[in-house]
Image (tube, rainbow, N blue to C red; front, top):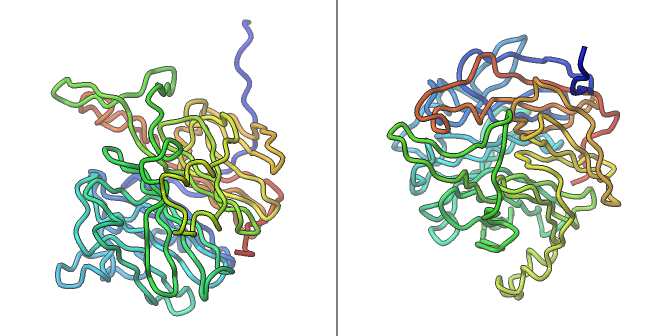
Length: 361
C-alpha cells in the first residue's frame, strides 16, 4: 500500500444545508446560531436565518427578508455576512447586490438587530462616494471602545473594482473609504488559485475565461481593538494596519499604504476571526485547511480534511469551538462553463479550539 496524504483535526457536523448555499455564520454569547444566504443564483427563500431546534427560520422575520421596494432600508436584499457582537446585537451586512450586480441605491446597509427584542434597532446606509457601482460589501468587525459608541470596519471585496476598507462611525453614521485600491486591499495580479487540484478561473457558459479576481475579503480585529487584519480573497498574503491610523482622515489615503504591515503568506483565505488571546484563525481554501496565526506571527495548520471544501466564514462560540461554513464555492457554475458541480449538503462544521471569542470589543 502506497503512502497517502494525512488528514487531521477533529471536525463535528452541526448542520447540513440542502437548500441555498450559505456563506456566513455567527454564534451569539448565548449560543444562538445565525446563518446568511446571499442571492447568487440559488432559490433563496430568506437571506438571514437562525437555526432553531434543527430548523432554519427566517430572522428576524419573513417580512424583513422579503424585498419591499417601498422600504428598502428595512428589507434584507442579499446578505453576505452576519456578526454577533457579544453585546446582544446581531450585525447584518446587506450587499443589496444580487448576483454581484451593481448595488441597489439606498439599499446597501449595515443593520443592527437587537437580540433581546428581535427587532432592527438601527440601519446605516452609505453615500455614493462610499459604496461605488462596483462595490460588494463583505465582512465587518467592530470596536466599541473608540468614539462615543464605536466604529465598524467593513471590507469592500469588489470583484471588478477597487478594494477598500470602509470605516463607519457608529454614532453619526459617517462612513469613508480607506486603502481604496491600495496594493494590500487589491487582487494579487500573479495569484493563480488551485482548488481540488484544478486551477480556479471564471469560465462562462459561452466559453470565455478570465482570472478569479476578488479584492479584500477576510477581516479580523485584535482583542485590544488596535490592529485590523485583512486579506484579499485573490491572494495568499496577510496584512494589518493600526485602526487609529485607519480612522485618522488627516492622513491622506495615498500615504496610508505605508502604514500597512505585512505578516507573510498564510494561504488563500475567505473568512478570518480572532480569539480573546489575539490568535487569528484563517481558512486555506486551496488546501482544505484551517490555519492559526499567533500574535508573534508563527503559523500552524490546525485542521486538514477533505470535507473542508472552501471554508468561508468563521465564528468562535462561547463554548470554545470554532464554527465555520464550508460551501463548495469553487464548484459553482460560473467557474465551470455553466455546469454546477456542487454536491449537497453544504455544511456548518465546528472544532474545539479551547479559546473564547473576543467579546472585549
